[in-house]
Image (cartoon, rainbow, N blue to C red; front, side, top):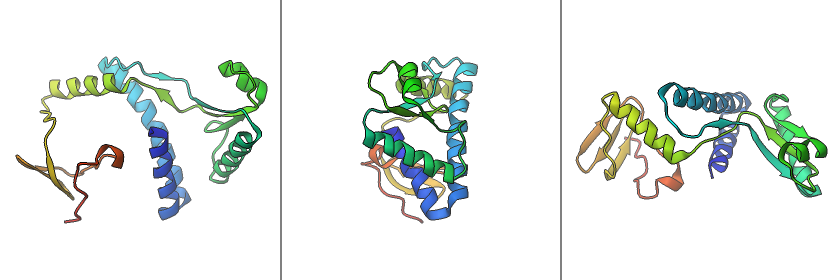
Length: 176
């Protein structure tokens, strides 16, 4: 699910504002992985953070061709082996221990976390810093710089709307 959201965001950046914005977004997303790991380590948030990259195996010729196409597209946007690498069949099998792999795409910037532990750990951290968290607060409307709830209006410089699949009960941004 997360990878799908990331692909959608990157695709929208490329379509709407161009290749430079797409590169900048990918770079920011890659930097975010390291930032999450650094904050978790510094603040003692035990979210099982492990940065080891992501491997997408190609186990048939169609998957291998799609991997080659994805790599070619990434190269056209200026990505290097440090960002995305097509692994040979032997290297892919060696890396993940899978049989019949014809190759793989390797993204070194990816990490795994335990999302619930991260959310709980960050919530505890910000509460120790004096922030109040109000869970299960109904949102009536989202507008630039404010969120109107059943209990009042929250104002902020930036309001970030959650991804669509996690915000199905949240009214759409009104633009007012």
